[in-house]
Structure formats: C-alpha cells, structure tokens
Amino acid sequence: MLAEDLISDAMLAEREVSTALGNVKFLRVDTRESFIEALKEFSPDLIISDYNMPAFTGMEALKITREMSPDTPFIVHTGSINEDTAVGCMKAGAVDYVLKENIKRLGIAAKQALEFKNNQKEKILAREALKESESRFRRLAENARDIIYRIELQPAIRFSYVSPAVTRITGYTPEDHYNDPDLGNKLVHPEDRHLLKGMIDGI
Image (cartoon, rainbow, N blue to C red; front, side, top):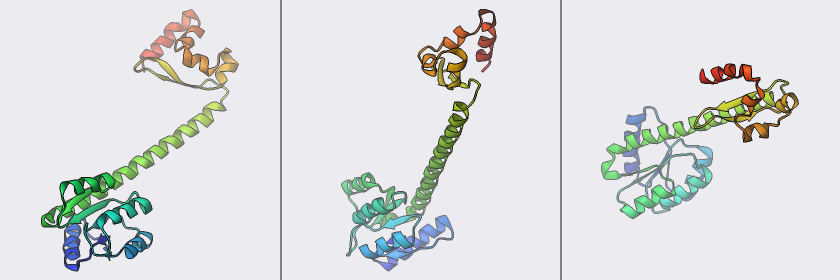
C-alpha cells in the first residue's frame, strides 16, 4: 500500500517495487480515513508512506499501523528528512526510510522488509511448534509409569526434567534430583555406576 498524495511519485514507487518484487498489487491512499479503511479491507503486506502529505503525516500513518497492524513493515519514502526525524521514524517502528531522490533503493528496501517479515513469521511458527512439542512431552512424561528424565551436560551436568514417577520408584521427588545432580548416580548400585557413566560419556 502506498500512502502518497502525488500520483507521479506513486507511479515511480510502484515501478521500482514491481521491478524488485515482480507481480505486485498496489493501493494508493492519501487521507487518514482512506488509510485506516485500507488497513482493514486491503490488509497490505507492506506500507510505503510519504512523510509530508497535506491530509496527514507519515508519522501519523506509522502510529496507526503500529496500533492496527503491528506486523506490517512500514517504509518512509520522502522528498526530504532530517537525521532526527529519520531516527524518530525508526524508533517508532519503521523498518527503513528512502529519500525520493534515491528512489532506486526503494525496491531493495521493499524486498528486504518483506524478507524480514517472513523471517519473523518463521521464528514465531518455530517457537509455537517448540512450545507445542514441549507440552506434548510433558503430558506424556507426567502420566508415564516409568521414569523419564532429561539431562543437560553443559555447562555442568544437571537434571532439567524428571517425571513424577521417580517419587514412586525411588522415594525421591523431582525436586530432590534438581537440587542434587548426582542423586541419580547415588541411586545406582556401585557395581553398575560405570554403566551409567559410560552412557553419559557417550552422549
């Protein structure tokens, strides 16, 4: 989506972004009302906004975007901008700013912004998958009749998880094992401790 009051500038921006990204659908808006409506109805993947427009400013557009669509990357595209204003835009959530006199960089900036968005989405999905996997593991472990445990070897050997069944089988609670990383070794018959050591050394 382009927030731009000058059609000629919008056409130049569309050309550069299309060259970098290929087939792209654009929507141009130039008022606060049309900008808000487009965020709701058009659901843009990327917003490129002029900083100074007669109806409203790029900073206003950025603030609205952060409130209504915080995951949508926002690029400030302006004829002139001082360093303090540019820093302010970045602090407010813009992913980049491109001067209109350097419009050749707009396509690259748009491509990088979308790549960043996709990377962030992949990280979120990975975290959610890990969280679900951890939840399934705990449901299985906490209802198992056998002892299930997880050991961390670095920076020092310690139990990171011990299932509740350990209390019934050994008489010691999971908390006892967390507090004494060597408790598992102590519970093994002395003649068999070398087997446990060999198993840990082989990990």
